[in-house]
Length: 108
Image 1 (cartoon, rainbow, N blue to C red):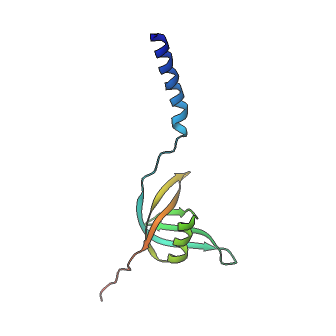
Image 2 (tube, helix red, strand yellow; image 1 turned 90 degrees about the horizontal axis):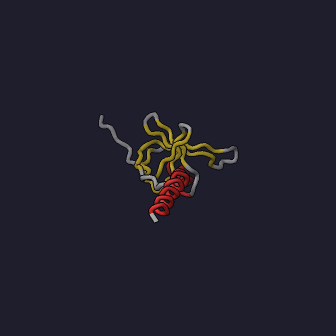
Image 3 (cartoon, rainbow, N blue to C red; image 1 turned 180 degrees about the horizontal axis):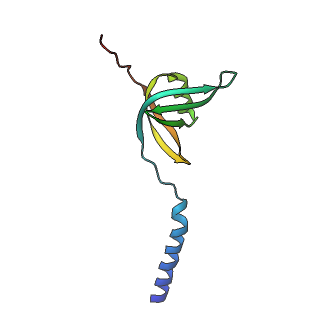
């Protein structure tokens, strides 16, 4: 009986070694504030949206919210909530929500 239990535990451990790396865990939401920029093709169709935060540039996933962000706030400052995935030093932002930021007014 002890041998069967140990064999089962060893098998479960080996299976976990193969399964765990393939699981994707839920990413935490981030809130970023930056400037929205867009790229369009010759026909005026949106082909890319980027959010620049300081010196960091995030490629925005072109899902419904990403396209809406680009269409509504191109060239403006926005606060964006979403998840970031990084692969090969490229950061991709999946937008969950966004809002325009108030432009800071300077007093003269």
